[in-house]
Each structure stands twice: as C-alpha cells, then as structure tokens.
Image 1: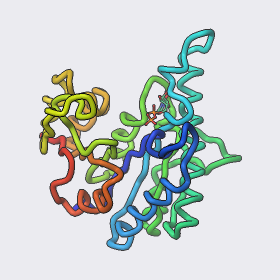
Image 2: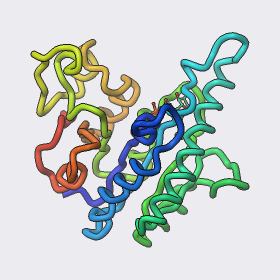
Image 3: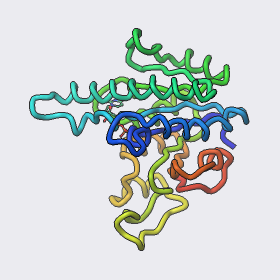
Image 4: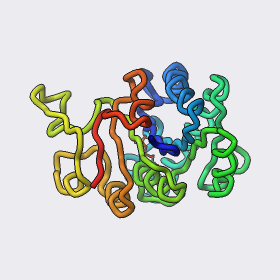
Amino acid sequence: MYKRILLKLSGEQLQGNLQGGVDAERVKWIADQIRPLLTSGTQVVVMVGGGNYARGAQLAGHGIGEVTAHNAGMLATIMNAIVVSDIFNAMRVPTVALSSVPVDQFIDHYTYRRAEHHLAKGRVVIVGSGIGRPFLTTDTAALSLALEMKCDVVIKTTKVDGVYNADPVKDPTARKFDHVSYQEALSNPNIAVMDKAAIGLAMEDKKPVIICALLTDGNIARAVAGEQVGTLISL
Ligand code: UDP
C-alpha cells in the first residue's frame, strides 16, 4: 500500500539488550525485517535516534549548554547511522548513511537529490543528525524528513504495540487504540508516544503515522501492506 516509507528507529531499540551502544544482533534482526520491503519495491528512509548515547534535554546542565547538548545528541545519531548502515550492508540490505550536518570524513552529506538517487537505486537511506538543528527530537526530524522526501507514511517502532490509554507496562487494564486522530494525539496528555511538534507536522500534511512494536516478526511489512498493525494516527 505504501510505496515510500519513513521508518523511525530510536537509539534504545538499536541498543537492544545492551546497556549502551549498538546491539549488532538486534540490528541484524531489523535488517531481516527490512529486506522483504525492498524486494517488494518499497523505498525505505530511516531516521535513527541517538538516545543510546546522548539526548540533548538530558545532557544539558552542569555547565553543558543546551546547544552543545543537542549537538552531542546529533553526533550520537551519526554514530548510529554509520554503524547500522554497515550492518545492513553486511546483511545484504543495500544501504547508505547520510548526515544532515556535514561531517564529510565520516559520512556523506544529506541532500534531497542524493537521497532520491539512492532510493531509486533500491538502497535504504539512513539519515543521521536529524535535520541538523538543535532543540528537536528525531521524531520531529523524522516527520520533517518524511514531508521533504514525500514518504507515504511514517512508521515509528516502539516497545509496545501501539498507543494505549495508560502505560500498559504499569497498568494491566490499559486499552490499545487502533486509531487516534491528530487532535486526540495532541490534546490527550496520556498520549505521549511522539512529541507534539512531530504530531503537529504530521497533521499539517495529513501524513499517516503508524506506531507499532518493533519486535513482532513481520510487523513492519504488514504495516506497509496496509494491514491493521499497532495504532494509526491520522485525521
Ligand atoms: N537532535 C537535535 N536535532 C535534530 C535531531 C536530534 O538536536 O534534528 C538531538 C536532540 O538533542 C535529541 C538527540 O539528538 O535528544 C538524540 O535524538 P533522540 O532523543 O530523538 O533519540 P531517540 O530517543 O529516538 O533515540
């Protein structure tokens, strides 16, 4: 159903069961989930987070300025982008890593045209450093990139399989929503699956966002095929 997707992978997911850094076994598993998408002709853009190393909002303080902290967060995402792209390629998932902030020694610079070129060649495009400006999360950067690259959908993979009316880990009576409107996602304080800036961008462009569990085999492919998976955030 969706021809071009934006997949948001958080640092925490790349970390897998480790205490920090990247769990190569987890990333190999993700490569296996993405390979069938390429085979069926779906174009895949990945925005990686950096929370397994640094998040600006948490790092700032004790003398570390906010801009420096966010820059460190963006550098963390670049580490993830280059490492994940190597593992994907080793797993025969052709991939290129691009960075919004030029760091030419480590990674090619992202441009819209370069990303289009790689997608047309059937490569996964992993974007590091978000959109290259501080005070944003990679969720918001993911929506911005999805708008720029005209992705048909944003898929954010999470630990739980969608959006609940309460934390399902703490509350066994928590109920999952199959669908949540942008308005509801913005106004309901219990829905914190994505920051409001990201939801706002999605709403402005009527970009569907699917929240689903990463670790359910075939979940991403089912979401791409248009099956009911996790929670759809849309109009
Ligand atoms: N970041 C930023 N601008 C961007 C994207 C990310 O400043 O366009 C910084 C921000 O400090 C963020 C950090 O990079 O906290 C790492 O990204 P994020 O926290 O979204 O990672 P995740 O939680 O998804 O692993």
